[in-house]
Image 1 (cartoon, helix red, strand yellow):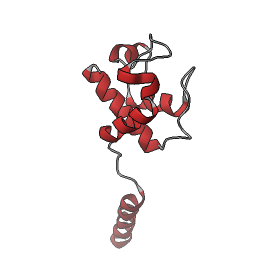
Image 2 (image 1 turned 90 degrees about the horizontal axis):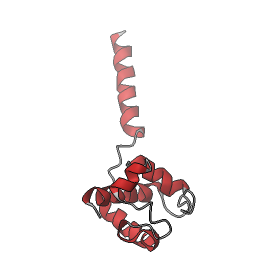
Image 3 (image 1 turned 45 degrees about the vertical axis):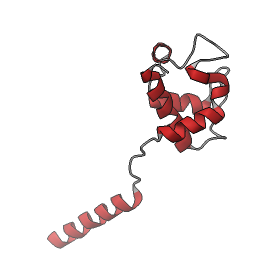
Image 4 (image 1 turned 90 degrees about the vertical axis):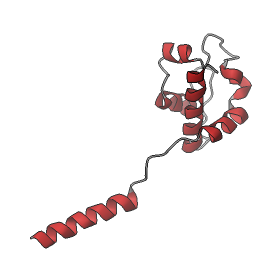
Amino acid sequence: MRKIISVLLLGITIFTFAFINPAFAADTGAGEKIFTANCASCHAGGKNLVNAAKSLSKADLEEYNIYSESAIIAQVTNGKNAMPAFKNNLSADDIANVAAYVMEKAEAGW
């Protein structure tokens, strides 16, 4: 019985390490490059050239309930109102890097 349990635990451990991806650590340096190439035309310096009231400042992101990486990822992925969706243009990793960059810059005051 102990041998069966040991084999099962070993199998579970191997499965876990073989098939579960480690946590993705966003790369803000890569995010900056992607932001510059894809977002800066409307959001240069954290501003919003389409709707000035909805900048990428910490205060505005908080006011519109998007002051989190997951909320920014959703916004960039799916778009909203005048903002286009980027899910067909950028990878999920690219979008996560942009979100981390936006959060870092918002926290620093752009």
